[in-house]
Image (cartoon, rainbow, N blue to C red; front, side):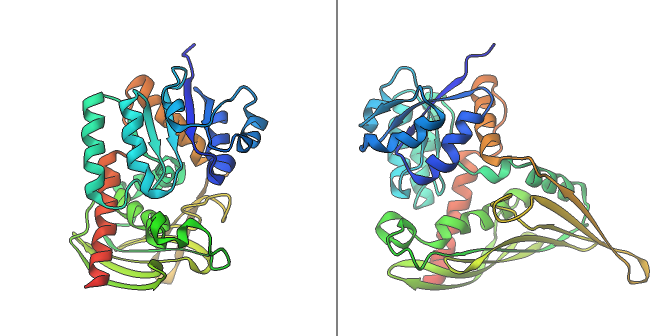
Length: 328
């Protein structure tokens, strides 16, 4: 039997406690071995599902732990690249939360370090591991909707009642675009395997230095796209890929089974005004567990990973371009 990949987590973030920690524990070929938290008491919820967990009160101590193979980094956004670099230098594989960086240029040294060490390093872009997205991409590649004409995406939530949230803090890399625009922009790039030629419209509402509403349009080779992202609107998410002969729609594209059912809809017009909708459902998939298992296959078997650092850099370059367009 293959020895499980031993994971350590830097920081006891809520998301690590509620999603990624349990996912690592549940994933095949993985074990949650260690946690680093400056407040050791925060380890208790992790030990509830991983009783053998070792706890370090210093991040560097976890990186020096010889019984840790891979490190998951859910720290505030500006800390992702520095700690990913340190982890690679310590000989650990790295999975860092999105957004990986604050600018595309910040990712370049990480790519160089990955190449120099031969270790696996990736952004935690979980949606590409979900079977609903893999199926949607296959349908698009097969020509199920004909030539793609337009992409429309929306991802919104409301956190105005939580002013202390780091997403509302400019000095912590806050903003709706880094938090959720990374999904609407990135999934468009991943699905279409295309890069934007131009950001044609960027209307952003700002509060205290962070974007709270963003309405953005772009031109890609052969198609256009429009996205709405907000931290000040009722929760909603939807992605539509509109072709000449059909439409692909994902109604819970980013938080499947939390926001709604994971499903891929294929809409096709018929003769005489008829309209057919084929629905494929994916009720049992956990994209976080799938992400951990895919990471392990890459480390253990050399399997191709579906979201490289170069993919993360491409989406960050797009975010950089959106901000530049908005600021004129």
